[in-house]
Amino acid sequence: MNKKKLVLPLLLASLIFTSCGTTKTSMDIKYNVDDYVTLTKNYKKLPVKVTGDYEFTDEKLQQYISQVIKSQAPYMKDTSKTQVASDSIVNVDYEGKKDGKAFDGGTAKGAVLNVATNSDAKGGTSFIEGFTAGLVGAKVGSTCEGKVTFPSDYQEKTLAGQEVTFTFTVNYICKEATIDTIDDTYTNDNFKIKTVDEFKKQAKDQLKASLESQKASDTRTAVIKEMTEKCKVKYPSNLVNARLKEFKTRFRSEYKIEKDQTLEEYVKKNLNMSYKDFEKQAKKNIKENLKTELIFEAVAKKENVEYDDKGFKEFVKSVKTNSGVSTNTELYETYAPNAKAGKEYLKKMYVCTKAIDLCQKGAKVTVEKADTTTQATN
Image (tube, rainbow, N blue to C red; front, side, top):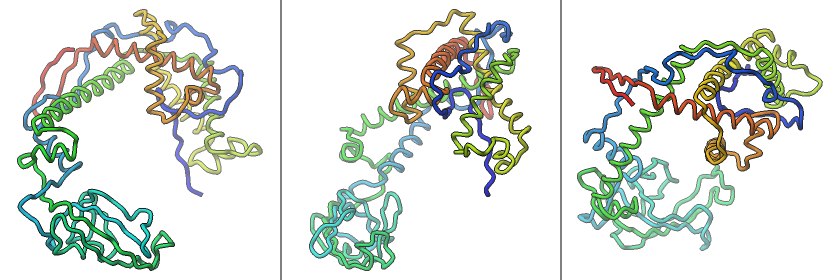
């Protein structure tokens, strides 16, 4: 049997619990966070270092636009060519028919084909043998046909080994699109943007936003790391034990452990560790998670960071989107043994997130590059 790795949650990682009704949970445990956390004195003006190149330049913009073109729309219309050659890249509409009837998956509009390699010019996906052969010699605007036979082992059984006819309409011959050759027709056809100038302006705005977002993300990570290193934390033992108990319940559910098998038996049989090491690793991960929670809970208390219903709803909406769940109840039940406890946990995490925002806003950020170091203060 394959050995499974022990994977435990970090702050706001998605947890999976079985519903326990109104059973007491770790969220019911009361404690005074000031008894367990000693904050570093300069947490509101925390010096942190981030490594990256967040400065906007024209060179980066050129590279960014080139990447967008290459990844999303690498070809454009070549008005100088009117007939398909054996090495052409061609934009076509096509329809496949078997015994005179169109079949599922055999129709496309605006497909960009590489005639020479018999493949999708954008993705490189190969077609059945001879698919593009009938296009050679066809003129732009004309219609042509080609017969092909599907392989006998083709996955769609109704087409396996069958001869079909594809009808192609040649829209235009293509050429490679570059930042120097694209025109208004290209941007309008591929991005629904009227002009090249507008396309480049949008690219510039997106790149600037991306660089700013990356710097903010890196700063946030650095702030959390610095706080967990500089602040002193003790752990409420009853809270750690309660989280451990909940983790074991979740673990049994996630790995579908039979009721007549103990967790200790399962661990010894399926994991590459002893039950003692299993609990030790679980507690270590729980404490890592708790450390961040407790630190920013202490910041929130000291700075009077309060819960607000409007902000919480937006927070839940964001977490729900990232988690891929459809209802709030479903989301809450992924963070605690029941929906009520899960909602309370997310309320606490929302306030902690606001406390992180506070520390991040006041942080003294040093940006380090590979070759130079610049000082920038938020």
